[in-house]
Length: 495
Image 1 (cartoon, helix red, strand yellow):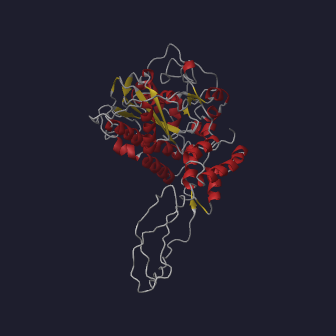
Image 2 (image 1 turned 120 degrees about the vertical axis):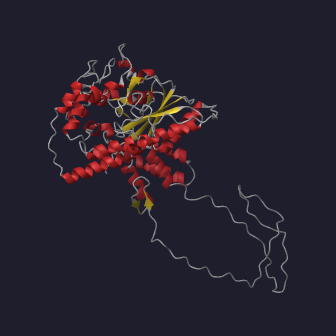
Image 3 (image 1 turned 90 degrees about the horizontal axis):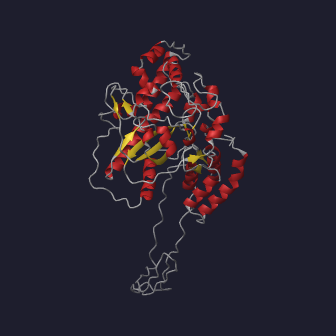
């Protein structure tokens, strides 16, 4: 992989920081903070810190003992009350501890050679497990292969979408979601039925292999998420259903004291990352983003929705760029499915953790509330032209889940890293959209269908046409817009 000139310029400074870390002149946290400021991602900085920590603990002098210089062989062993101990901060001075002078005739046995079971040692990258002969080679590999330029966002008081809201904004009915419309909207059902599937260039064996990849990717959620007939693993919480997304788990009666909500917020983020989240943010639950009505595709259950929780913990899970680039294809579908499966693990795990602390918490996938505006409120990113969340770390390459709770927390502030101006001039997503569903003009309040929410001046994506194209490909997902977004690239030499 190639690296940009700015990355090369930072390498001498990175090596200098590594030497300071090895010599214990710099703490691990200080190294990570400095490395991130030089352009490394947090993960890359942590990897370097783990692989190139201090060369070893500070040597502690070994106590030396005084013994008779020429004791005769028949001299009895007499305890000596003298002991020399070299002064060291961590070793107290010991006085008047009896020691013994060994007989001069005692000869220690020769050490037995230990057979070596390996041929040598190598430096292994903790991210990709590639091995290198030297530490310098590993450092160069991390700097060029596992780093990404990330803009430093500004924390703002209001999310960047706030300027585009109108007084027509109302809560959205989940029944009008484009996937939900496939269940009840007869006019749209006729359009779906009229789609002509394009001939596939893949052989039957290739189609079988691709379908197997997708099936394995969604497996966790499809089998453990819910046992409701017809549940495909993508819906999230279902009303009255058991499984990973269930809301029926009891709350522990003893309530864990939270005198410091800020510290608890940091703990929540650490636990979420431990469970598998790549991004975590916290916001107050804005009721405008809660669906006015729920609609369960697997059961066709429909009804009003009220969620009386104070906070939303929003988590982002990175999708694999190499597979996303195969769009439209089974690889892109699998990259999406594996994160839906992971969502069904991460959100319920975090909700379980909070319930064990004694506070109510419910896990959500795409259900209950709109994840993108909540993620923006939680400071994870901004809304892009393609209708998805764009983050400084992954661009559009993440799936979102959340946990709603009353655990005392401190919300994060929204961010602004220039996406609104960037998306006004960059039309990469619109150019590669085979359904021509992404608008190329200015923001507008004019909707393309009831699947667009009223009351927002934005780039309204024609999600109906998007889904029609999916069907024309045999139901294979299309992620062209995600793959083409410059912010989705793992390496960003243009930044």
